[in-house]
Amino acid sequence: MPKKGTAWSKLRWSLAQRGLGGTLRFALERAHRQPRRPDEAKTQLHPFDERYGVDTGGLIGGGELRSGHRNDVFNTAYYGMAPSRFQWVMEHWIGDQTHAALEDYSFVDLGCGKGRAVMMASQFHFREVVGVELHAGLAGIAEANVAVWTAAGRAVCPVRIVCRDATEFVFPDGACLLYLFNPFSAPVMQRLVERIEEDFQGRPGMLDLIYFNPEAGELLEVHGGFELLWTGTVAMSQEDASVDLVASPEDLCSVYRWVGR
Image: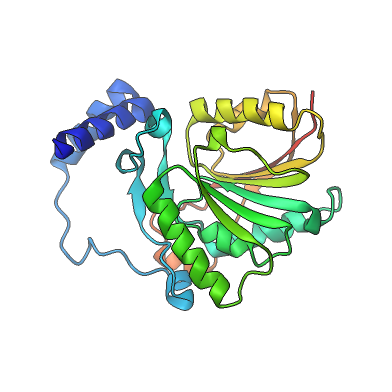
């Protein structure tokens, strides 16, 4: 029975993400794909994990991330952000003098997975860093990673992990920097935009959003309440590129600001 449930979950996810035609094409391609050798199936340990004694590696498809929530079908995948890309965009955002002081901001990672970006963000002097993750298993790994990270004295601000759907999370008071590594598709993104409208109705200019691989970015650009501050590609270090399974030099990153309606 569990195997049937898993297969149905994967099918629902594929239909939601790829459509019927895309699901059929994927199934045919997979049927004709040559099996990988055992040595090819091994996931190389990311230098970040090796350096800090944490577990943030691996690629997990959205169909594998079942939580029982109605939004499961809109999960994209879990994959940790390349540290060099994260560092560059953070320094770029901090260098922008048009927002409030860093210490006034809460950093919120929606769909934080195993918490790699959460840990990296905690090295900056935010008011706090919050990772929000729907999948309980990933949230538990993120909590364990954060415990190792903070015990080593690497965090310079409070850090917490919240196991919750992104559209049900209540944003902290004050200014927020929202971080998204393309964690979910457009239907959830639309609900998130509605939540931002509610939570930041009286806080224009108090929410910035960093969106890597912004597949649903058009929802923000046509909304009228968001200003596009910057968009472009971000280079990876040679170390990150040598172990990255999915990144492309053409991957976009966009930065938005909530300005209100």
